[in-house]
Image (cartoon, rainbow, N blue to C red; front, side, top):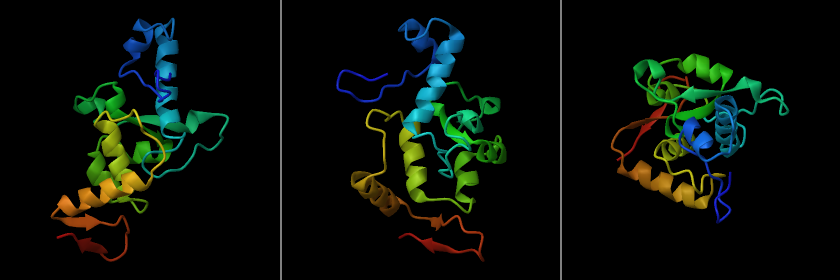
Length: 161
């Protein structure tokens, strides 16, 4: 699952795993696809950052459809992220941005990484680094809004201008 330059590579759909013969059955392809997404996120929840309960069994780390299937979302790499069972259940079919920004663990860096993933920019997707921090700062400076902090205290927020 690495390209010629050694970058981690994910096919966009389960069918592409079968077409490219990285799996022989649809079930194997689906498992490879799901495992690849989890691996790209370092086997952690994209929302809260928690690892699965047991590192040997990623069963508590689910795949969340950012745009829910009930609202037209598809089984595509650019529409799914790993989420712990708690976050996946709590988000349910809500808009991910609204739900995520209201959480006590909200971090703009996490939102940026999710947006990066959803845009399809997964080639150099990895650990949040200094270059990512610069891009997040640029994103913040282009926004003219009240930015949530994720804290449940008495409406703690700050204005970006």
